[in-house]
Amino acid sequence: MTVVDPLEMCDRVIDAARKVEPAAEVAVSTVVGPDTLTRFAGSFIHQNVAEHQNAVLVKVVLDGRAATVSTTRTDDEGVERVVRQGVDAARLRPADPDWPGLAPAAPVAAAPWDDATASATPSDRAAVVRAFVDAGDGLEAAGFVSTSGQTMAFANTAGQRVMSRSTKAAVDGIHRSGAGDGSGRHGSARLADLDGRDAGARAAAKARGQDGAIDVEPGSYEVVLEPACVADMMLFLRAAGFNAKSVQEGMSFVHLGEQQFDESVDIWDDATDPRTVGHSFDAEGTPKRRVDLVKAGVTCGIVHDRRTAKKAGTESTGHSIGDDAIGPFAANVFVGPSQAARARTRTRAELIASVGRGLLVTDFHYTRILDPKTQVVTGLTRNGVFLIEDGKVTKAVKNLRFTQSYVSALGPGKVLGIGSDAQLLAGSQLGNGSHVPSVHLAAWNFTGGARG
Image 1 (tube, helix red, strand yellow):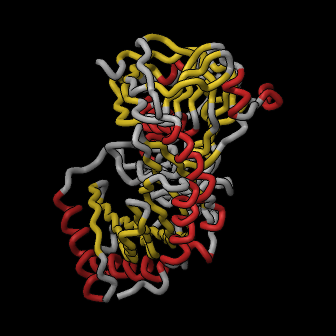
Image 2 (spheres, rainbow, N blue to C red; image 1 turned 135 degrees about the vertical axis):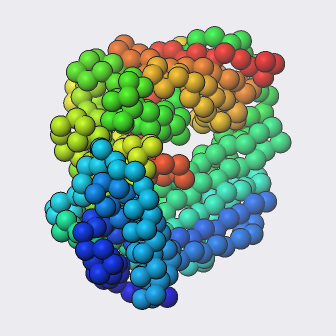
């Protein structure tokens, strides 16, 4: 049965819970709306997938004993059943001494929403696919175009009762030549903002540029990293770094108040910025707000959920993802120049022109963190790495492995330039993506080449 009014659904669950167990603390969230995908391969669309989400998540707490249950049934019998399951499960759980209580009532901001994206048809997405494919001018293309329009509601017995609507669209694909692949991607809250031709042209240029790829010796190279690489860096920094749980457990690189990054760098999280996507409150019902993480290179903030905030004697920043094992997560990260460096941003071409000898890296592949404390990550460049000589891209370079501390690479004196090409990359991993530019870094440690 379709949920017509998500907030009404939350109220029904709470009313049912009060009848079953009046003393229970209860929090309910619902997510309703379409999640659609158009896949293409061999330059042809081969699949359209549509899922209408209709999920209800219920958290029941009895004297600090918490249990979470879920259902997709929204009829009266389904509601009563999920409530009884939650109450029965909570009675069996041990008491949680760190239970922070429910989020109090507080207003939330509006999230980016676009009617046309929420109601996008396969034909609408196919137009973006067509533009991507045509930009390859005969190259073989593969990838996807996705759209979603979610309505999320939350209510609890502490009086919080809020709703948020959010849309998201993304194009992510490759063009393939005989020598290799090239990727292009873009994300937005609006399908109309996606430029399939631009993404396809970027992918095609990288693919065609793979001809005659050479080996280079492992070592430390000056690099220009395109936004996809910077987004990968931010994924690890926010998951295991700016996360208050990691800080409290001594597993984070973060030292608040220290100059851990180059003075030209600002990093912040802001779900209320119209350039990003996602909802305006977190899984606990706390309103999201901007949090400055790095200001002019100085690490100045971390994100909290209610549990870590209670331990730290502060307030939640609205960054719960509903998983205490992971902790709070900065889901809407931005990277940009500090105030002093804003006048010195450069185009991608200008960043490349400032390199005497180095590498242009357009994408990372199969990255894995080796040490969360130092943010040492290993991964591959796979396709789309090029040699820069005297400020010009000269040759494609074969696959390289790197082993590099992401924090060290962005450290004081290491960031030689920040691009003016920031874009939203909204992937399928945790969070709503990163809004990031290209960067010119003094050194990147490549530990192996195509020959090992």
